Length: 135
Image (tube, rainbow, N blue to C red):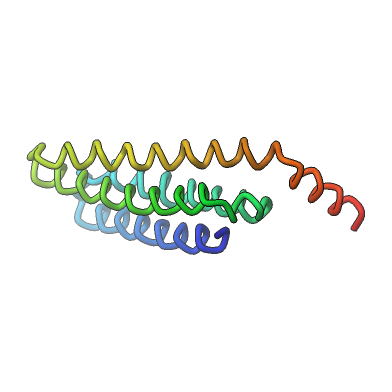
């Protein structure tokens, strides 16, 4: 799961940088908030999730981690796509989609938090730390 998070994070940074470069070239910055969200929620957050799951692999093996992954990676593109359409068109018809998909991302992050609290407080982490110390 950690590698998957990191690979998807690399895709998000590529998209975010390309969007930023395109905005600069055409001098149209209406999508600046989309650019920022793709970089923060896509690149930074996904990379951090991936690194945490790398160092705590037992947390990455849970159903919560998998559910978090899918909620985040369905919610984020839908949210940013809807926001982009809204910003370009000036029409707020996409607002319900942006709101619902934002909530999907938030639920995914809450599941990540719950997963960490459950897994980092478990005996598995203490045993893993003990093994690391003896190596």
